[in-house]
Image (cartoon, rainbow, N blue to C red; front, side, top):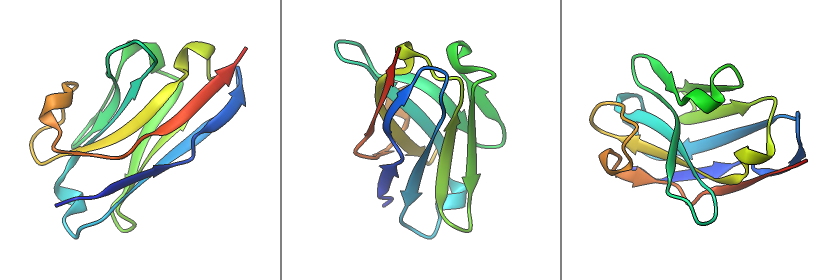
Length: 120
């Protein structure tokens, strides 16, 4: 069982930066593939970034967002730079005991989400 708790969301102007954190419980954190998803109002949940042995990003955030993990702290991060209004969404971290995937159904554990709002 893994419990995930996100933090770091907020309101930022376009062009600004935020760093999201996701703290995980459990002693086997290093074994999980991790992902960040986001969901804007009226839209489906969208894969943003993921990592296991490698990292993967959706095209719309490549070069702006960076996913990283600190296994000693059981924490995964999403550094978001050059934010745009279209990045506004609730951001969720997720953990999978399988392989890293951009498909939400592949992830067994989810955080509660943190709101990111980018003003123009």
